[in-house]
Image 1 (cartoon, one colour):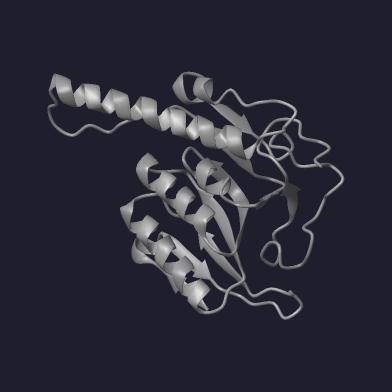
Image 2: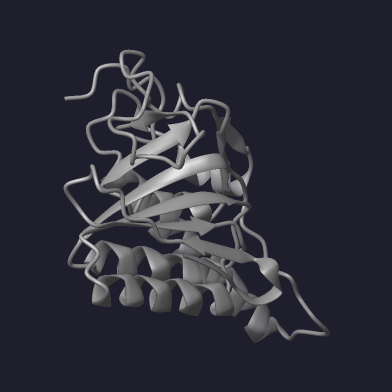
Length: 214
């Protein structure tokens, strides 16, 4: 069953594969992170669980969005009572990296990328000194949360990502190999790991040169 959300930003595909021992619901997420898509994803996950899903697979291909809703979705997915897998269909950028890291099992297509770049605010109209100070505090706090999540979810990797530097001054793009895909795993673990026709490799940690995961 396919569901196309508002403004064509979302496409949800739920599919159960008979050879899969678990009821797997697949969600394709290609829109930005904002209040609308945040609510849509929460509602869709809740419906999937109500329908008996044992596992949610979130396929991601998008360019990021708002920090507050990105952290909200991360916390929501981590708190779900069922397994969550995330898959990079082509590009995972900015706050979408946080969403990607919510998955216990993480995969990426061979020709895909992960982008870390500086935060920014879009200002409308005039602002006073106190509001500018508030924006600065929010940026600093969001940067700290982002760095803590990446560090926690990539703990044990052979090299640590310098997330504060990427988010403040020097953007960084990682390919699947740099993100930690072992060369010995050239394909998904089962036909249900990624949609038909999408080749991927298993991501163990989003960190450079992760060649031999435990």
